[in-house]
Length: 215
Image 1 (tube, one colour):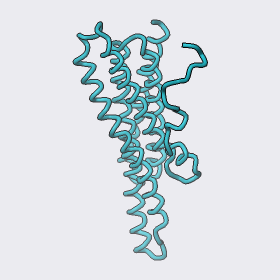
Image 2 (cartoon, rainbow, N blue to C red; image 1 turned 120 degrees about the vertical axis):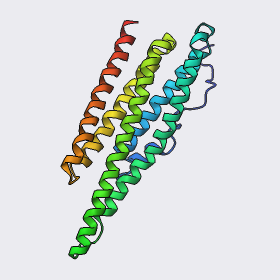
Image 3 (cartoon, one colour; image 1 turned 180 degrees about the horizontal axis):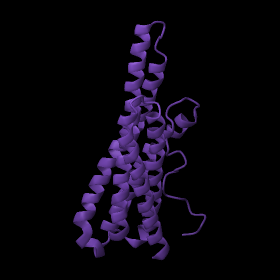
Image 4 (cartoon, rainbow, N blue to C red; image 1 turned 45 degrees about the vertical axis):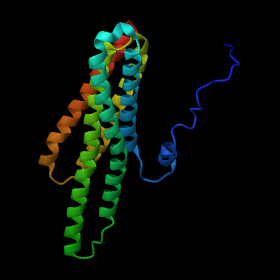
């Protein structure tokens, strides 16, 4: 086929849909937390692609049962991360609404403070789950780096970088909201857990990148 032959695949330039436009719109949401979840979903999609490509080759027939399991797990994680894109935006909107509550008297101030703390806790819980799910994706990608087709290892590596970005990006929202939660002792454990997930994601992504460079 010559270089001037028409490309059969549809134009991908508009395949992002409206999400990138929504991010660019200048509104508070969707923001970094939603983008982090989107990165995690993209990482899972790349993993699914690698599973399918590998299973299409007869030489990997023995690995097919496990590859099917991995693909199914990645599909489930991708679906959840897609939901978390919206949940992150909703949780931040809830924080904004709480801060807008009236505070003209003691009763209103007390109710407002309680609502703010509840909203902040959800604004921690959502990105925390985004990080946890994205780390799950990353662990499956590490397995694919060994069991998948070597020809698709670069795709696994790209997915790993996206998953790491998802974990680290989600951690920013976790930390900034933990900083505003009044109960410092209650915030200590999730802060430590988040730091551990960030470090683990970095280690796994580096392992996959090293495998790519030495293949």
